[in-house]
Image (cartoon, rainbow, N blue to C red; front, side):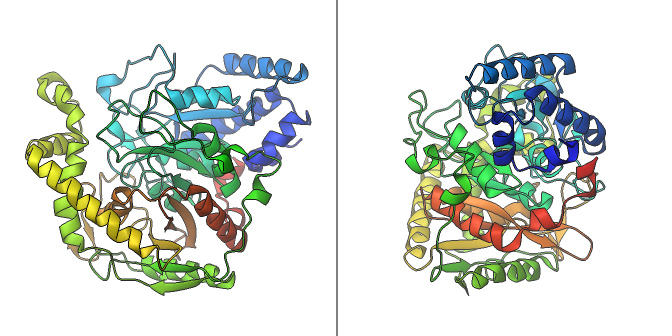
Length: 486
């Protein structure tokens, strides 16, 4: 079977091909490693790549298991690379920080264990900014990840390595994390799908009760691929008390049935388009027009798209909800910040977040949490009238990869390293499942995406809607990156 055929195959189809023994796991691994060797030096998406001979040995063991009728799961024999915020036994887990550049975990994190249990073989890590901060993937350990369509531009972040790897066929699917658009923004800029599930759907975290902002999720070139990986990493775990019970709709998915199960009739449903938050959010010229043109695909399959007023004053949300809770979520950097030697190694964004955490009292954090609760109730009411909500995945197109962050959009100064990503913050705090879906390309060939937002805990319904959109548009299939073929 031709290498290009394997590289370009959807993950759900590759799984069937392997388990039907039409190609061996060892052959698949060799094809992917050859492709990574050709493509990855151009984009720097996969880091800490493991020894080729050992990976081929592991693939050979998968072939033996398959021959004996004992495949592990749908990922059996397929290369995977977890985001460099996840512990992998024996593989560097740096979090993009010089402080952890020599950190070699002795055990796998839960998500890693689930990926391995499904048969995935870990070939390395996907690149991320330091401690996952910022929606531009660069760090002092490995450098910057470049856009799959234009290597002079950013791939987004913080799951930029994952998005770029999937877009270029170096990985069939990839995991990621999302606090402030880290699965959504890079999906938009890399023309793939990035799914931020309801908090608790995918268990994780060190502090188990208070920080409900960041979550793990899935990326892929097709919605069925995203759904299968989500089903793999999702599900209740007793060691994570806020994890959600297993979703039987996700658990029932297989490579054989996933496409059929994701099909649904959406005619008559309404989408509320919030756009630029009624003028509050500065947008680069072309972003809104491109997204609104892409939204026409929903009308072609029987939905109605209506402009919608934002659920809260934008400035109030940013100052009274987002900043206090974002800073609070980074108080775990205390030890690094207060050690002078380690502080010298931290990038400014980490210092900014920790210093911000010191500005707020416990009363302030509680007040912000109460306002967040009110915001959630307001968003929930919107779903009485709308099945889904929609906004762009970013406020500008991918920028120069050598920049740390854009300082201005449409003439408005960006006063923090993450202000340009304000468009994603509300949906983190609303705890709604949100998927970044491709919205096409501008005249310069830069990709943009749309955040499609579903009702809380209705993750599967949102996947079904995204799949209908994929079938109606096929942005990924129609516009593959030139580098995809190596």
